[in-house]
Length: 171
Image 1: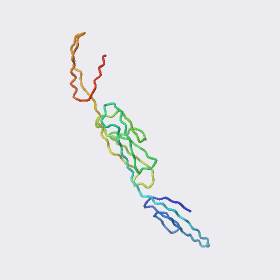
Image 2: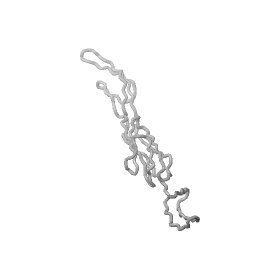
Image 3: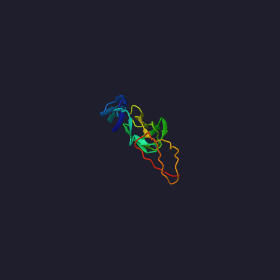
Image 4: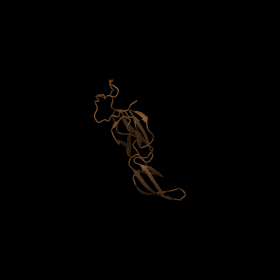
């Protein structure tokens, strides 16, 4: 008895017969010494699949220095998947379905590529969708303010952005 799994487009040859469809087959192999053998074949033919990968982020609109977490989800890629994360086309991260960073700047583009050695695939690689990050930073200059010791002074920061907090520090 022979159990065999193959990919679509492949075949199994027993004696002079070739098989390329799922099913159970019985083949009699004859010899010149009248010693015939029967081979029973249980054949499973799997369709060819195309791997794919997509990524999502926990937050797309972040502040400069804030942590962002990206998660890759692969389909038709088997169990042994290798991940290569990219920011603006440059290699970053580790071989993981998650990528965490706090060093993104506005406009950075995050993608991931996968490779796999799974069988019955049309290709062994795939590239994800691209996520363009919005990274906000507040920039301003503090004007020179003349003040007298013990007196209050008003400082107008003229910050053009909204939704921000200001923390004062002396020194």
